[in-house]
Length: 452
Image (tube, rainbow, N blue to C red):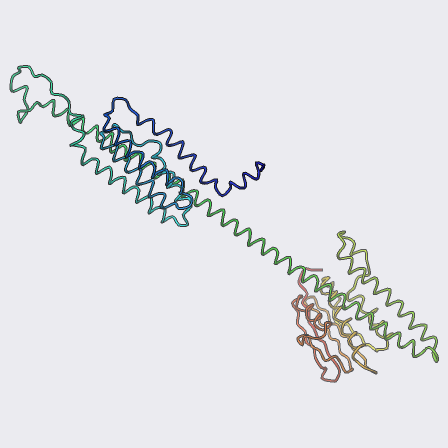
């Protein structure tokens, strides 16, 4: 046996039709007893009931299909209600109008206005209904004289003998009777036609206003939903870009650490192997240098891995900081690996921002690593650093063969990493052969004001 939840889910596509059917049944049940009036002529009752139920069927059909086809449903309900009004007028008001079922027209108009994508469509529907109501009311007013005057004309009373000058009007007819008949007609037209038309028009206007408000609210909700989807998509793109940038940064740091450390370790190992027989003391020094470089590399790796630690102080506790202050140690390590390096520093001391400070160190580290790997025998390097409160100039050159890659060639992760660092800081870079022979890397990094 299906549960209540399953039954509710199965009936979900039919809920609109079921609610419309329940509404129509309730409106018909509360409207039809009004027509069963005692004392009504039998012949009039037969054709009136047939006409009323026929047009009521049109209205019920309009209620049932209003959510699927709102405009045809409005046409059906409007035709049925207009026919009810004509039938009521044709029977001299003995058939009431409007009944509860006739309120289906404002209900369907509300559906049209709320579901329409444009207000012009619902305004056209309102104008058509208002025009139809005015036309029906005018038609009823034109025929009211022949059908209603006998009912509202007062009976002629018995006339006693009175002087002619006091009893007769201008044309010889009793003046009081004519005046009372006209007053009754005016009252009947005002009550049965004018006031009824105004009530119907007011109900239609109210239904349109409520439907238009619902349409605007639904459009606003759709706009908010679309904006939320766009913001969510944009947020995903931002997260993806941030993750890609972070991966690129970690990849650059790992490349710099591993490439430099392994290059120094290989160079020292080769020196130790070459000097193990003739200069044992140099072998010992080379092995110690390998151990020192290995330990420093492990500390640097721990610092990089510490970036993934949820503790915000983990990265500060792991490893030693890198920057301009650590350049002498880096250069001594390269010298110990067998490449002579000349280091000069011009300008006033400046407290550089962390990004600029670390980038200067990484650029020097990667360039000297390239000299170790590609410079060849007898190559020596020169590092020149010039600091200013607004910029940092760095120039690293060597006399070796130099790498064949450039930052834009698609090869060489080290040079591409240097170009990415400089680009992120808004600096400029020049990479290529040195006019005096060898390889040259020249960069200028801006120092933002007020960022220690």
